[in-house]
Amino acid sequence: MSFSSESLAQKRTLSSLLAGRVVKRPKQEDGQRLHEAAIQLLEQNQNICSLFKELGQNPDQCNTFWCQNEEQKQAAFKETSVAASLLGCELRRQAAQLGVPVTALSVKTMLARLNEITEETDEKQEEEDGRREMLTSSQTAQLCALLQSSRELLTQGVLCPKLLWQELRRDQKLPRLEVVYYLHFYNILTLKYIVESDEGVRSWLVPQLKLMCGWKPPQGEVETKHVQQEVLSTVIGVLVKTGFDQSRDAAAADRKLSVLCCSMLDEMLIWLLEAADKCLPVQSCEGGAQLWIQTFDSSLYGVSVSPEALQSFFTHSLTQTLTYNPQLTVSDAITLQNKWIFARSSRLLTSLFQKLAVVFSAE
Image 1 (spheres, rainbow, N blue to C red):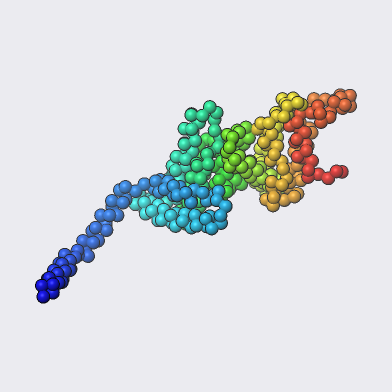
Image 2 (cartoon, one colour):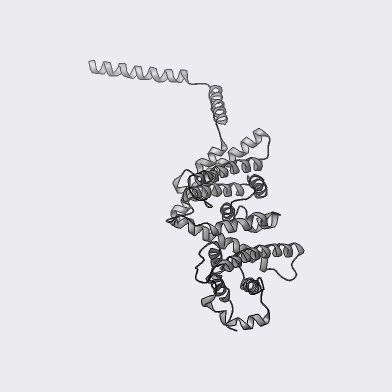
């Protein structure tokens, strides 16, 4: 009986507690005020640039570009897509609150995050003996995560590629070629669009190509070396396609663009030939020019360049090489022809001739 009495008292106590909760339940307007206060607190402490940064902290997202497992890649892309969707909503909300176009706000925050990534490289240059021309693998992963999110924003109509390039050029007089390559890779800003729209493209693209050719990745950085070769082959592929894959009835603007691309390729070829002039026959000349020669491998272009355009480019390059810096008369050429053998020629020059000869028949 004692146990039953205690149990009954306990039940009554529990019932009274539940009844008290019902009485003390907050009113609907109280819940709404709490909700508004929570949103206000979040708005005051929200930093969109930090949201971009958080997207690059997930190891799965950072390794999206490098991972080989298709399942992992799809999972990382899906996660990035969801995060970018939330980021797009926040960008629209803040743009409406500030009274500015959402594309302007998204470009500003994206470039702020981009500068954070590239500035890390600039800081490391001060610690290293030599200048580092390319991003580290960690920075590349962060950049890929940023651009994947930016690609999602582009599909949402939140990001404007044209405005992005204008602000990037205003911010950086010499855009980093590796960053330009990844913008092209993620189809945010194609290299062809950049060449077409940027009037000063020659002033920075050619010097950046030379710097990338001349820089040697530290020993053990296999991925960096792979990216270096991929950047060079992609750039020359776009220049060759744009410069030599033109029909006779092309518009004046297309012909002008074709001449521009040809002139940039010629400048790189002359840079290579000047290096060959300074190179003694016994030297291997392993440097920037040697790396540029590797881009004359016809297998690198794949289906991106038509066979006709490739044949035209190699014919043009061979003609430029054979007519470069003429110093001999016909009689001199005949008199000295016994000296013109592979053993006495620059290895750089013979390597170039070997590359150029591949696409031609014996005749």
